[in-house]
Image (cartoon, rainbow, N blue to C red; front, side, top):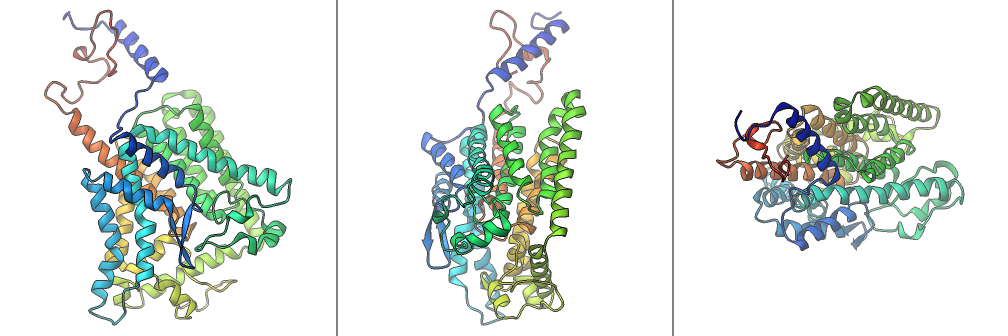
Length: 468
C-alpha cells in the first residue's frame, strides 16, 4: 500500500469527520470585494423588503433607496464585466426600441416612463453585484430580511387585524406610485382583511416573499450549505404568510418552493422522503384547494380583471406588425387603456382597467418582441440555469415561481425581487465560472478533491484536510 493511501475503514472515518466538521463550522465561501462592498450588499437586501423606503419622484412615482444602493454596487463591481454589461443593456431596452420606432412613426420617447424603467430595473444588476460581493454570506442576510418581512405580516394579520381591528402604522403607507391605504382603510377592514405586510398590497407581498424563499433555497444549494434553524424558520414563516394571503399564486408557489427546499434532504434521508415530502405536498394542496374554494364562493373580480387586461394586451400586440416587433413604447400601455384604445371587446371585467396587470406582459407590450421578449427570455434563462451543479429541476422550480409572480401575480415594475431573482441567478453564474477558473490548477486536477481519493487525504496528527 502506498504511504499516502488510506485504508477503506479510515476513509469512512475521514468522511464522517469531514461531514461533522462542515456541520459545526461551515466555511464562508465566495465572498469578494471590500468590507464596504459587503456592507452595501447587505443594506440592499434589507431594503429589498422595504418598498416604502423611497423618495417621492413627482406625483405618480418614487425613487427607491434600494435603487440608489444598487447603482453604487454596480459601479463598485466594475471588475466583473457581466454585471456592468447587464445594467447597461437592460437600461437601454426602451431607448433602443424607441430609436427604431421613430423611423416608422412620429411617436416621441416617453421620458418619464424611461426614467422609471432605469430606476426600477436597477435591482437586476445590483443584486448580481451583491451576490458576488457577499457570496455565501448572502444567505444569512436574506434569511433575516425574510424573518423581518414575513414575521411582521403574520403579526399584522393575527394581532392587528383579527384582535385590535386596525391597520398598524397606517400613515406610513403613503407614497406616490402606490395606493394610499388610508383612502380605503374602512372598506378594507370590513370586507378584505388580507395581510399585505410591509408592501402596498397582498399580491406584492406574496410575490416578493415567494421569490426570496426560492432565492434562499438556490443559495443554500449553490454553496452546499445545510439550512440553519434561522433559515428554516424564515422559510416556514414565508410559506405561512403566503398560505394565509388568499392570493391565487399560493396555489402554485407553495408546492414548488416546498419541493425545492425538501428534495435535497429527501434524496439523502429516508425519513425526509417518508415524512416531509408527503406532509409538505399535502399541506400545499390543502391550502391551494382552500384558496380556490374561497375565490369561487366570494365575488372574485380581481382574477377576472387581471386575466382580461392580459388577454386584451395580447390581442393588441398581434394586431399590428410594428407593435408586435417594437412595442407601443415605455409608459404607453397605461395610456392605451385609459384612452379606450385597448380592445376589451367581450372580455369580462368588473372595474375600469387602467393598465395590464402583469410585469412580464407590460415589458413585452411596451418594448415588443425584439427587445421586450429578448429581456424576458434572458431572465428566464438565468432562472433556468440557476440549478448549476444540481439537476435541471431546481432551475425549473425557480423559473416557475418567477413566471407565476412576474407574469400573473404582481403588476408593479417596482417590485424589487421581480428583477432581483434573475440578479441572484446572474451573480451565482458569475461566481460559479470564476470559482471554476480559480480552482483549476496543475496540482489540483478535476476530481482530485473528491472524498476518498488517496492523494487528497493527508495522514498524520493534523487529521483530515479542511478542503474535505
